[in-house]
Image (cartoon, rainbow, N blue to C red; front, side, top):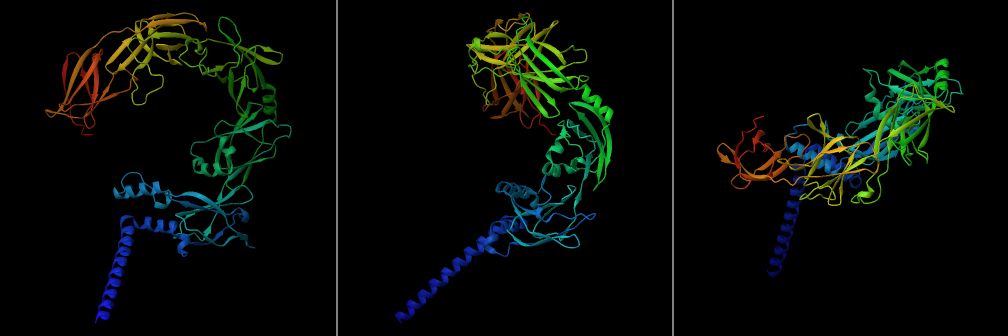
Amino acid sequence: MASLRRSLLILGACLAVGAVAFGVYWWSSHRDTGSVPREVAASRASADDADAMGERTLTLRMRLLPEGGVSALPTSVRIGLAYVSPDELAAYQAWLRGGAEGAGPRAFEDLATVTRWLNVPATLTAEGVVVVTPTRLPAADRYLLQARANDGLRFYEASFTRDDLPAEIAPRIAAGLRLRAPAQMDGARLLFRRVEGSQDAAWQSLMRREAPAVLDAYDERPLPVAAGAVVAPLPPGPLDVIAVIDGVESERRRVTLSAGRIATFDPDAEASELAAALSATVALRLVEKGSGTPVKDATVVWSSPRGERSLRTDGSGSVRIEGIDPLLPLPIDIRFASPETPSFLVGALPSWPERLPMTLDLIDAPVSAGAIARTVELEPLRWLIVETPGIDIPRRPRVEEPFPVFVLQRRDNAMWRDSSADYFRPAGDGLAVSLNKSGTVRIAAVLAPWSLRFSDAVEIGDASADTRYRTRIAATGGRRVRLRITSDNRPLASAPVHLLSPLRGVPPKTLTADRAGQVVLDNVTEPAVLVEVPGFEQVRVRLDTAEVTVTLRRDDG
């Protein structure tokens, strides 16, 4: 009897363990598919369990069709394995839980990004079809096939999943352009201009992958082209072609490109010779206005057929810029390095802005020693040293607290208008503001949207790199104003209250209302402020009394 009882106990324990194990398995399997959309769950299983399950691997069988007697290059066939990242998956699931409202992918697989490329074997048949040898691929959320023909005009691309594997792929057919020019025209370069109604945008991805320099030629970066060379791939359709010889535009012409064909561009010989003859060298010299002192170690940047180029001025302030069309304005950018000395030392303030763009007109410039001579006088920066009593100026920008904000203002007749300045720098116990021209100026200190202080006006004279002007921001006091924020006769307790200045360019400041819906503004100097609370309409509030009740209406829009 004891032996029978022990056997029954062992049998019962085994059944209990089995029931628990089955319950855990059933819960985990149903939980996974119940909390994730069906297509997402299937894709996750294919990506995560592919190698372990074996049957999730994909056997690739595909035919790349010839076109116009041209076949794909078997050695060019490759497959990209694309996966959806965990972050993208989480965002997609949240989008589905929200009802799939708003912008979203056409399909889950569109979120997948290629993380690995595999070269796959392929063979060329007698009919010109390239057959991808049956290849077992690891499971992925999406696959991308790419291949090309050896003519530079036919490209194969297909995006698919294991459930919509294409059996055959036809090529996408581009066009080409051949430059037919004498071999001595080694300075020839081409620029392209899009024509309205063309399909260039649809080809940008392929061109960026196959020929990025060709795509750059659409964006003011001339493409060097040897005589007889073919430029491809190009989108079929109309295209404006600009020939540039030694930096000078010789001609522009509209050509119509056909898919699978190479058009010929014949530069006009006389126009090319004229452009080569017009190509000039500019001898540029930079000097300080007034003193004539050479501006040394400035970097002059300009655009050339070889892309953006730059040269540094020598001890005489000179650079020589070659390959320039003298009949066109020459845009240049003069750049100066900032001093490495700490900015709080007034004596280390820079004499020049970091960047000084200008355009040179060369038509009437004199020619000296075979070059166009041009001297440019640069006005050095003058500096206004501002004393700021009672204003704490941070040495580094503070993202959470943008105030105080300083604004340079210039007098225009009887009006003060905001003006730009290259530098606002802490200096000593105050501020140093750069000035690039003469006139009457002052500094406005914005301590808050409702609190402004102004410096004394200063008359700025002619340029001199050593000139320092001084002024002081008046320590004027303000008043205290208490705002009571209400809506429907109830205070908006603990509401975030955004306060905006009526002045242009002043950042807002956010205060949190207390339990009574009140915020306190100290040092008020302005007559009004804009008040905004999320969910309510913005209102302009006058600050002419010590206590102001602000009644907001809900924003129904």
